[in-house]
Image (cartoon, rainbow, N blue to C red; front, side, top):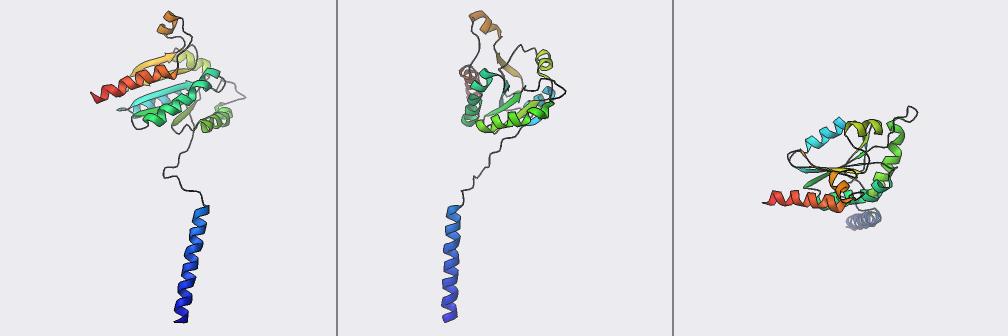
Length: 192
């Protein structure tokens, strides 16, 4: 009987110790969020967009050396958090300038640091094509630029400082309020 009581008290003590340890450990996030960046070219980035056919995709083209890009980027994260199931958000950094002494990998740490600070838990790409070559290839004069693709995978709208409507109204740039209007319209179209 004495052994039985001792065993019960020992078991009880172990349970209490386990509870005490559990209370000091941080709670586990049921869905651990990680921020990562892949080094790809523009065509490979477009392949990721195509894989999300059936969803609305928002692709933000930016750089850590672009102040307007850095200012607007948190709005991409907000869009992702607000519509994560219906809208796929992505980012493509154009930090790589083409210098042989500074390959794309040279910029990865800086880009990743910014993405982590923003909690950008979606597909992030560091483009491995020199920025000038990329801009010429995709006919883009400057960043920031945001591409919105419909559920069919086709480009619905490209936002940039040189778009025809900005030139007509003498506006210098767009904001995510403009992007959100297009996304909201696409989301509403699904409900009809």
